[in-house]
Image (cartoon, rainbow, N blue to C red; front, side, top):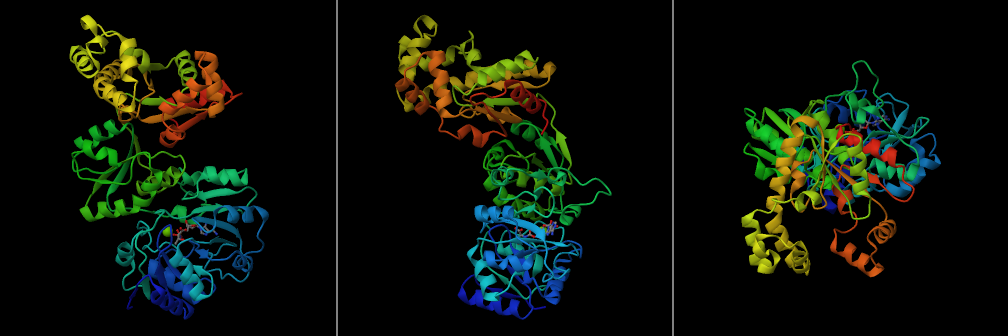
Length: 534
Ligand code: TXA
Ligand code: MG
């Protein structure tokens, strides 16, 4: 079959519309991944999608529309919960499954009595649906079993000679396929995580079940709620394995593994001596989602036979990344050897120390970094000399540190604080490493209570990061009661700290410790993070 290459402009869209109206198959960009489109209501056209992808006939397709009015004819009814989802997330990366109407042929729904409908936001996808003048069935535009294509090039690579045309829309913004939620059962059910997060769905629906296949493999013989989940998916050619531990432990392990390639967060690249492909920063889930499938393609291009990736966080869009990577790795997940360190962070007044004390009472090893910096011997001679050069000899008269004087001079302005940190962080980090080595050997997990975890680069020692947060008013009241500070002083202190959201964005787990929080329940949660449970 000859494949036309269409530019992502008016002419290209018109031609795509023509081909689709006459029963053709055209690969088009969407905001999630490229899709392979055909007239959803024409069984012969839909059959061409299955043939081009070599897709099993029982794996249903998603139908794409541009307006709410186009939904009704495709389904038995549109319940109120569905309208709420559409209102909140359409156009965008969300597919809603409902009981289908007789208008939708069984080949489109893979033989099921339900149909997934999605209203994409990508301007080219919308223009093509409008030009075709009908709802378009479109699975991801990859050959079955391959990673979904997020670029024009990858789409061509998989479908050249197998489809009527491919429309060039550059790279996809979201990078993982849409979130799939089913409203066809008793309770709304998340079948596939994507750009719309579990947390966002809960906020709109109030109730949500998460299908076990989202985070785990399907047990042999078990029926899949979403047929796509039973197929080998997102598979690179390499044997991929996920490693659970800190970035440093990851690098140590992979650097020693024979013939290994790494799929790693950007921050890990300097630590790695093996060939590595990055997919976003450790704390930037959106970038991870956007870059993941491209990175899997790179592993193939490099000829990797054995590759390792870090086990992603499951928070927010992270859950979608976790889901795709775990599948690409066929759920091979290994806990790395060495001390298991959990970083504890949070703004002042949130109750970090209360959580740390509670965990210490439950028998866990806790390193209190503030206390450690005050212990004698942490600041060695070289460090004291550097402090004197930077802030004047008065900060360490007769070779003994005068902490008050140092604080007075160093906390004057941002530049001075930065200088102070540059001088003091290295010896502090060395002391913390010694302490971890001492504790981690025997005591199991170690909680690292470190207010400046990220600034000091200590996050690279942590397998998990746990944040304790509370609303600003609550924190202000607690600080006023505890430290007897005035309103002005509290405002000042808040301003000197990281902006709101800083810790939540970076933590894999967040404990909301507002007024009336249930401490024992929170400690249970923190304990399960320390134990490395999901
Ligand atoms: O972002 C996306 O959703 C992309 C773009 C092109 O829109 N499409 C996409 O389609 O990812 P596909 O076919 O590759 O994945 C659809 C997934 C499959 O796992 C399928 O089994 C599931 O959704 N699915 C579709 N209809 C379903 C239904 N009626 N019941 C349960 N699962 C369904
Ligand atoms: Mg697919």
